[in-house]
Image (cartoon, rainbow, N blue to C red; front, side, top):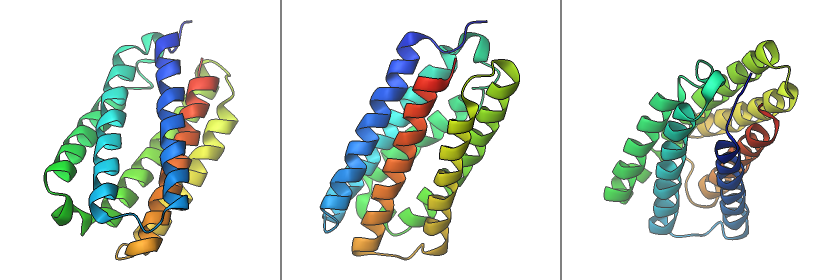
Length: 175
């Protein structure tokens, strides 16, 4: 049974590394301007969206498992474009938006882990563990939606790190 193509695995690892680097950068510079933070978030949403759409079409035998990726991808591209075209307006509800997205992504990653366990027996446990960490970060966003300044930037950095780790683990461990 063939799963993710090599190109898709590499894409997951690359976008995961970019996300981790963005997270580290935000930890190092939590006072980043709203404009810069919005641009980074917008472009990463678009990149993640395009990658999600492409991973659906490249998933081969795992296509049923990745069926939600196309919808998540379209949603991310739309959110990224909205964020880039209206950074100041969108930043007002960014915490809630990120929290909802992360919670949905964590749920889908948990589902992916259990589907991988059933279909291929791949290293699904690591993906599940990272998805649970992602859900914890999501709850920080949802419980502190009005957080501003340094806290929001640090939470977004944590989101980039947790999402990057999930993506790297999918790229490495998904069959």
